[in-house]
Length: 79
View 1 (tube, rainbow, N blue to C red):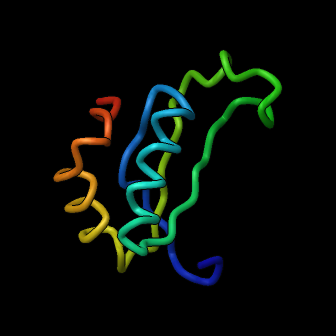
View 2: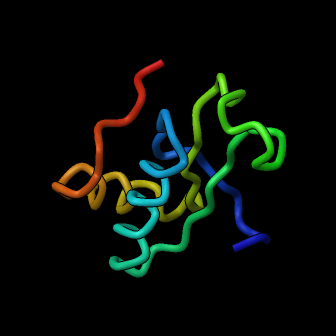
């Protein structure tokens, strides 16, 4: 997935919420990455920008559909 363009499909308040959403995508066989600005995990409380869930651009529509219909996915943080 590294050689493919990535887009943010959701932004969450915590890494736990992002990991839950990532597991939903994994079950649907959609690769994803989590990006958090938290000093490399040293300062999780410093993540003022939220935790981004990224997928390949060509998987974005399907990922959005999967996340929107999953009861296990928390509501994303609305900026």
